Image (cartoon, rainbow, N blue to C red; front, side, top):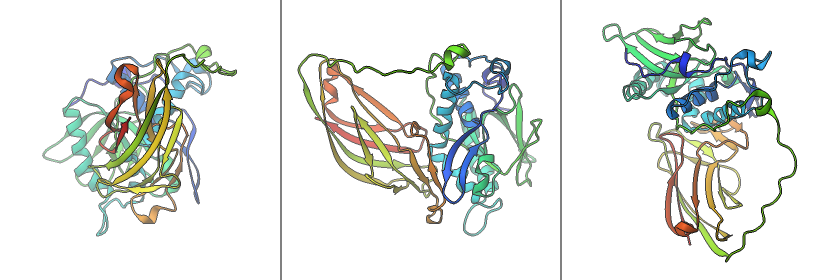
Amino acid sequence: MPKVDFSPARDGFLFGNYFVNQIADIPGIGKLQSAGRCGGMSYCALDHYAARRPLPRFKPSDFGDRGVPPDGHPLADYIYQRQLDSFLTLSAIKFITWTLAPDAGNFFMRGVTDRTKNEEFKKLREAIDRGAPVPLGLVVARNLNDLGRNHQVVAYGYDLDAKTQHMTVYIYDVNWPGLEITLSSGRNDAGWFESSPGKEQWRGWFVQDYAPRRPPPNLDKPLLEGARKVSGVVEEMAQPRGRRNHITVTLKRLAFFNPEEPDCAAELALEFRIGNQTVRWPARGFRKVKHGAKFRLDRRVEVDVVHDDVLEITGRIAADVILTDTDDFDALDYFNLDQNAVAGFFRQRFTRGDKWGRGAHSVHSEGGPSGYMLEYTIE
């Protein structure tokens, strides 16, 4: 029964997942409302575990009737940000493709049951054997209208009976704080049975991409202080005196990688921010990408910096994202996601001390084994 040293009672939240929020707007289907912020709470718990920092020990009674921190409190906002991160990893495509796939599979595609037991269980075992808890995407939906019924949890252990092939996964389910819960499936079972008080049943699950983030330092602020909104006009900083340095940043090439799903495609757009300027790729619409796809950019941006400036270059997936597995999904799988989403993110900063980064650069996006690589130069 291999397990990592993760405990739902110690490393999970004391309150349950009673958030309500809209995560997508799908043309022809309508508003998609998630069942809380399960992915955000799971990622947040893993962030604190990786940083060896305890989660804020708020109790449901600290928040009144809702039982969760209100929007505007740093913890609620961080959980929401991580919720968006969890949906903007390339592995999150499976929430759609697995929803539309059959359980048993057929000539044209592999089924959810086979992929869970023969692919994803192996990934889970490898992660746990390395000592790493991982987020799982649980799939129950069978059509796009029910996407919001899918779920996300943290897995921290497994068991496999070699004789009977009975599989067990130990999870922290944010819907049931403090409880050790299992997912189990026998040799001939198509689905997975959850031992929670709700006795949920799932069609299957997959290991999600995850990259730890260092949690902000103010998540445990008292409620009134943390929820207070900052208002007013932000004054511009005076331009520091000193000699101006003219910098040219040239975005050269993009390469995409998704080794775990090399045949899966995603239609998306990227935004790169260079100083105070933003470059979108492609300039309009979206571009279909898959593992190994390469694109030439040749986009030049001119910026001026002075002696104590910081030249910051960041990239992220643009707010409007289309996730597809086949061309047939193009009209359906359109996600109008929050402008502050940061999946596929990178940040590089340069100062006068390192000559404003002059030279050639290659940077990989965060978010797991899938993502993109940008090559650029600073002159």
